[in-house]
Length: 182
Image (cartoon, rainbow, N blue to C red; front, top):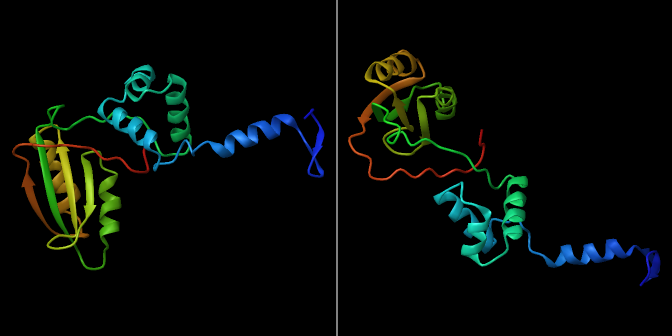
């Protein structure tokens, strides 16, 4: 069929037809349900600097396929490759979990939003049970931890009580990233 010919009563450009058909046959390259995407992500979670050629070889696909899939996942907001410092590996002197009870008149979201702006807080989870929030705090030294506790916890009206659980030994530290990457 020549460029600009009629097909089923309408003018069809050969390039539009060819590329339109190809796109409808391919899977969504940014889908989290795609097996290849999950495999690529698993490799990048082990080492975010793994070369596309190594990933392609491990998964028996072309390097271009890996490059395209990573670009599609990034473009869809499904994937971001970032560096995260493990608080234990970078030798912070103080690592503690805080069990926080929120004062009446405040919500866990209020306290979580306030605390999340502090760089010493690396984790906040709204929980059910004994506490309202679990928060992890890391500090360069003992004085920094005490300063944080005084300014951000003990002198605030939105915190009813806190239980401090100092970290003694870390057996596993896996960062699971979801949304809202910096």
